[in-house]
Amino acid sequence: MRELIEKNQRVTVIPSDFKYANKGTVEDVTAEGFTLKLDYPAEGILINNYCEFYTDSKNGTLYFESFAKEFVNDLTLKIASPARHKFLQRRRYTRIKFIHDLNLTTEEKSHKIKTLDISAGGMKFKTNENIDIEGKYAVVLPLSETMSLECYYRPIRIELCDDGSYTHSGRFEFKNTKDRMTLIQYCTKRSIEIANK
Image (cartoon, rainbow, N blue to C red; front, side, top):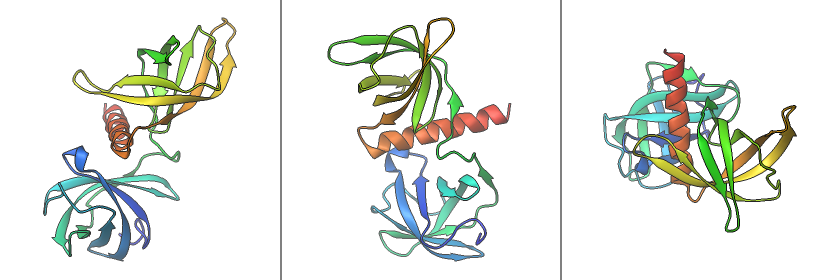
């Protein structure tokens, strides 16, 4: 465990009900696990119930599943050492293929786009429309038949393709932390599903 997690490292915790997602700071690490002090009270996190954990490391984003062995107090948990772990990728957020016809909207305009990939950091898409790189655009991301996520998109780079279309890359701005956590979880799970096919 000491080779994976270090003292003062920031860790994201996502229980089975992701609305109780939380973040914390590692206070101590032993061979049996680590002590995590959460930013918010541990609502939705239960003893011996598995949660997903994510943290940035020098080898990429570290992902593992584990559980709380003990509540030291409302904010501090003792987490069991995981049986398995996985380094997802070197970039900060897991990027996945995501092909959808969507709309970018402002109060004045709507632009039709075809997404190519997404991560919790942003997305890449193609369009035949000339979209202002200075703009801020609302977009709805369909994550499943029953769930979608609303956020804002800000362009960073635009490339003109040989066929006259444009390829855009840009970043997301979320209305709250829960939405970012939802997209992190979605992209990570899809990445694992695709790798296991």
